[in-house]
Length: 231
Ligand SMILES: [Zn+2]
Image (cartoon, rainbow, N blue to C red; front, side):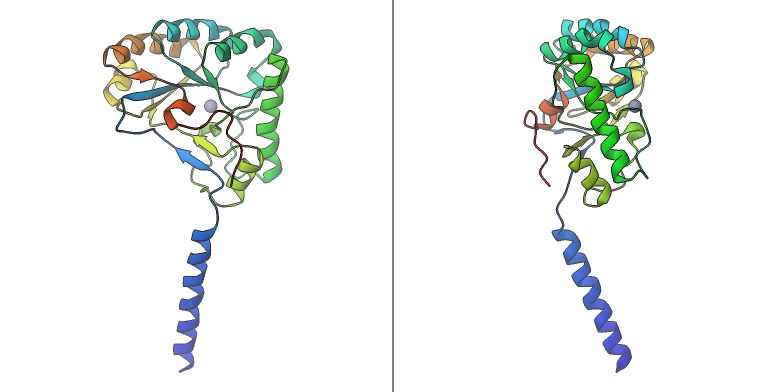
C-alpha cells in the first residue's frame, strides 16, 4: 500500500512538474532559418576582425540588391570605422549583437551575459555617436543554443534586451558548398575577412539569378524593427 502511495505521489509530482515547465514563459526564440515556403534568404557576416573591408562588402551586396546582417563583436567596432557602420545602417543593412569579446557564453552567469551584450552596445554607440537598437543576438560559437529558451540563461539574454537569437543553417566559406546547400529560408554564415569577401562576391550573382530575395535577419524572420524584450 505504502509503495503504491509513493508511486502515485511520484507520478503526481512528475505530472505537476512538467505542467509547470510548460507554463513557464519563453524568454527568447531561437532561429536557424526562416520560412522554407518563401524564396528569401539572409546573408550574415560575423566578428569583423577586418572592419576596413566593410565598404567592399557593402558595395558587393548593394550591386545585387542584397541586404546584409552584420554581427561584429564590440571590440572590433571602433570610432575609426564609425562611418562604415553608419553607412551600413543608412543603406538598409542590419546590425546584431555578437557579444563584446566573443566569449563563450554557454556556462556564463547572468552578470557576464549582461556585460557582454551591453558592452557591445556601448562600443557601437561610441562608434556611431548615438545609440542604435539591435533586434537579434548571435551567440559566439553558437554556444548557448542548447541552454534552452526558458531557463536562467535565456532570462539573462532577455534581461539584456533581446528576445530573438539568430543562428544559421549554412556555415561554409566554400562558394560551391553554399550554393549546393542553399534553400528557401536559409541563413548563411560568413565572417568579415578577405577570404569571405571573395566567397560573397562569388555567390551573390548566382543567388540573384536563382531568384532569391536577400534580406536582413529581421526581415527574413519577420521581427518588428527594434523589438522590445517580452518574456
Ligand atoms: Zn563569431
